[in-house]
Image 1: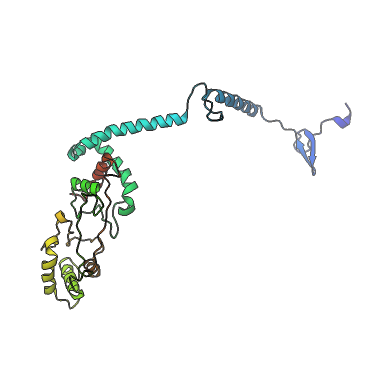
Image 2 (image 1 turned 180 degrees about the horizontal axis):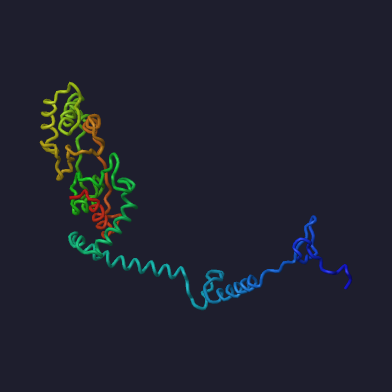
Length: 292
């Protein structure tokens, strides 16, 4: 062999070159490590075996099912069906059980709490907040001020039929629009509002006749809110001595509500959620601690 065909060695690394050169850069002849080659070959073998054993090769309208006939999609669907069946079983138990039985049965209480938490986040949190503390116009479910009653049965009924919803059994209690319908003058509304404020820890408007306000209250408001201002659950009349009001507690807010009341609406969930979920929601909401 002539000297022209002798392998050329790189002067820095001492590695033989391939003879390829680009812009003065010479390619070194560094073979891949043996372990890397063996791993690469093993991966090729593994891929071929996978094609044969598992579903992986697409066809015109289907796919090759493989020797084992295994399918992750089929496994996932089977696991889902099993979960639904298990949930249906304990859900039936939940529907059949009384709230007292649920409270004293650990597995039912655990299921109702978990199921109710998930359902609350999906259906109730947009209005009442993720922490259930509400906002102006949306009740705080953690306090003890419940217009329609805070027992677990009361909560369950409210969930089923809603408030001022389109359900035939909806809880319904409207406050008259004393200003819009000209039942009271603006001066009389100020008198009633100041009287209510004076009885609920607020400072009444200066110079307002509170005695006249009391007379107007007794004649127009006491039938629902009671002479003691503590409301009536039976008709959905709020407790006016409460520390918080649904639409804000101030003389101006009270006047606005008397003049043109905002009668909020809660949807009926009976046709939207299954009985087990509604019952779970009642248990979960009652667990906030503000219920009765």
